[in-house]
Length: 99
Image 1 (cartoon, rainbow, N blue to C red):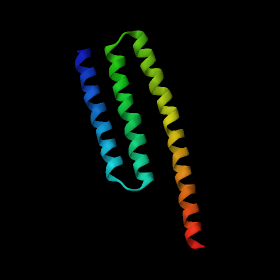
Image 2 (cartoon, helix red, strand yellow; image 1 turned 90 degrees about the horizontal axis):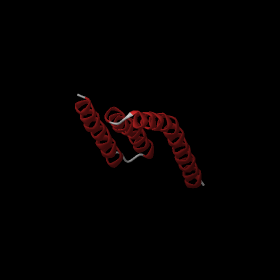
Image 3 (cartoon, helix red, strand yellow; image 1 turned 90 degrees about the vertical axis):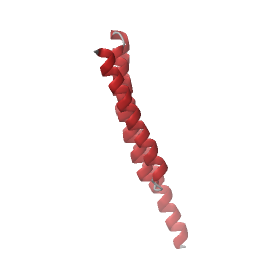
């Protein structure tokens, strides 16, 4: 039963990551690409790590849960930093074009 749950989590994680890759390839705007990459990356990796936690022993489960927590905290911060840099660059380009 645990193997079946882990397999379902792996398939779900791969589907989410694949949708995220499609979103990055499909959208042209950096903010939309960032949205697709960050949301799909966090959720997809969390599902894959949850599968490892279900299938593994207690040490593996603890490491997987710690990794999920760390990714959940650091991914939004990284996405925000990238979005802020993109917004500043876009504003600078608009100012230069206005001159």
